[in-house]
Amino acid sequence: MPKAKLSILFFLIACAMNSQEVGLPLDLRQHNLTSSNSVLFNPAFSSNYESSQSIGLWTRWQWQMIDGDPTTLFLNYTGRLDDSSSMGVGFYQHNTGVYLNTGGVVNYSRTYDFADNVQISLGINVFAYLNQLADDRFQIDPQIQLPLQSNTEDFIVQIAPGILFRYDKLSLGLVSENLIGYNITTKENSPFSADKIILGTVGYVFPLSVGELENSAFISPVIYFKAIPGFSKQIGLNTSLITNRFWAQAGYNSFYGISIGGGGKFFNRFSLGVLAEFGTESGLKEKDPTFELVTSFDFGRIKPRKKIKSFEEPKEESLEEIAENEKIKDELSKAETLALKKEKQQQAKELKRKTRDSLALVKKEADLAADLKKEQNRKADSISRSKQKEALALQRITKQKRLDSITAANKAKSIAEVNKQKEQVRQDSIKKAKEADALADAQQKEIQRKVDSINAIKVAAEAAAKEKARLAEIAQKTEEDKPQAGEKYEEVVGEDGLTPGYYLIANVFGTKRYFDAFMADLNKKGLQPKSFFRSRNKYNYVYLERYDTMGEARKARDGKFNGRYAEKTWIYRVVAK
Image 1 (spheres, rainbow, N blue to C red):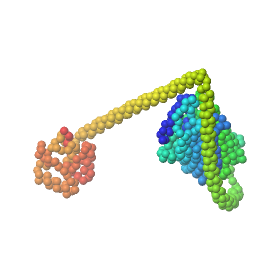
Image 2 (image 1 turned 90 degrees about the horizontal axis):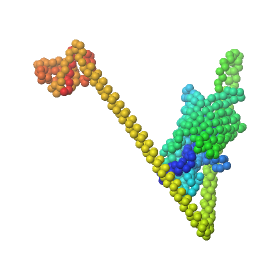
Image 3 (image 1 turned 120 degrees about the vertical axis):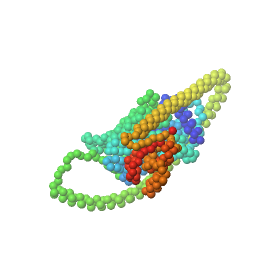
Image 4 (image 1 turned 45 degrees about the vertical axis):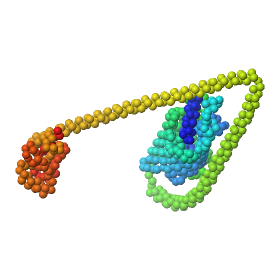
């Protein structure tokens, strides 16, 4: 079932791209969320929020005015567990253009501090949502009825991890929106996670020190790269000016165009902002602009921003001032101890209250999801009744047309012409699809041919390198085998079935009695000598060891067989036939 569902999805997207100027990617389209509600942009951002607790809302109206239903809605709560970790939960609804995903999101993030202003934050978003066909899915032509899949509901769990590396004011991020997906309804892997959506970011923070903005504002540009299967790569830039009272943002996306937005912070707790996005490509200029609304309410302890350190020289203090300062420090230490004790008690009470509020919020979000489901069912029933009324009206019109034979004849001719045009459109679509498949197959074969050619060149190069090394080794051994000046050396070719190699000869005997005595003496010394009889001269050759190379044999000879045999020895080489 998921494979058939995915095939229909790809067919609808392909038809929409042929009949429309621009197709809509299937990602979350969260490229403008670099500050508020930014856990969708990178799940590792939540552990760096200034507020210990906040509720945020983000809505996006894709290519439409705000009087319609938003295409994306994200309502979330985020709370800090400690100074280095945070956790959040939210309600999520996203219209991909073909499917409507409705469900929840759980976020967790933790930051690890290292020396020299180095931080690494790890985060994860877990999505759990119902996947169903959207009411406003793509249509090629209203007069052409596509064999769409029935409106079934699948429950899908999707995991999106992220990592953020910070060095001082520089940050590097990497996110996968759909690394793992599982369809609980069909008990199979989700086909929407087969091809991964990858987002990479590079950002920098520039503090501002101008007038009233000194030590309380900064400019933060972020460059990002996004890879979406089946669509062109997206490259974008977002630049934000953030202060304690307001923020402003401008950006550019290679697909969606330019964006500009801003907002304010009221009572140091509530933030409200809007953003508009305008298409710049030829296929998007005629579309309505895209609008976004972002809000957040901070009701926890605010973590102050780090101020820029002053570079003035410290003033020298007198002994009286030092003593007075020490006295003040002691008094402050006592007061701080009492205040800290009271603060811990207050925090314990606050934690209990937050737990109750969190449970109430989760219940409220579940009720909201149920209400949304009921509203969707009501709309579906209304649409069904409307279609029934349209069918009855069509029957009355048809009956009336049959009474007029001349009008009926003209209508039949018109219908035949329309059907002919529909059939031509269908044949053209099939032809284009076949041509696209043939082109893709030819491109794949050409790529494989180039890969095979490159591999053949690599194999030939490796064989040539091995042959060169072998010849060099042979040349080196040949040079090594040449007798040195003044050394005793003898060489024979494949004699008496001896194994080819270099024999370290201790002595040669023509008389067996002396040969046996010499062998017994060496055995007593623990040398374990060996011997062979050379039929050509009728002598017994006693050797201490056989070596594979001349270098090893010379080393043993010059080293007195590792100090175990002090008498003279010489080398006897046997060469293979």
